[in-house]
Length: 184
Image (tube, rainbow, N blue to C red; front, top):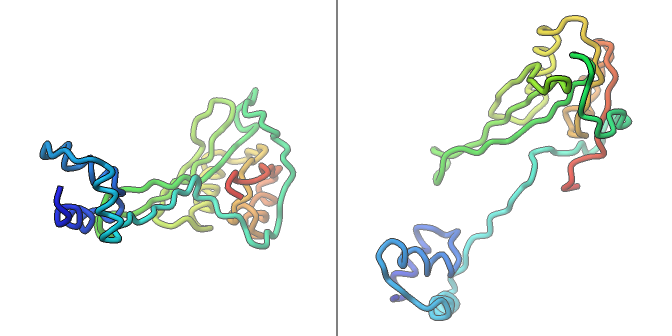
């Protein structure tokens, strides 16, 4: 495989390492090449893949949490009755590929009832911020007036804020928090 073809592939796909640069023409056009040769050409032309960082969760811990709660739930993710225990989290979904116009992220905030493991409420947003979590919580209260479950979350900045703590207290709920995201 000529060096020009390798440079062209790298220009189109800067995240490809030498193995994928070798595999793409082999798969698409039936052009076979030794991986050592491709590696040697990549080193000579200073072609390196752009490293993509993986994030295992979208939870960002609070730099200075206003409030943290005990882990009352203690991994007991079952309940005998509805509205006894609720658990919540925010999940990040990536969509699209390539350029910024066609790629993006959306965040889903869900509160589950641990009795039947069905959503109590959910909200979708392009931003992982306080209003997303507050909207989800407010919708859960509207759908279940008078409910006072144990409310379990991680220690993300939304759940440790003063405003969210006030919402929990006004609803008469008991707050429970896990130790934190495994990344931190």
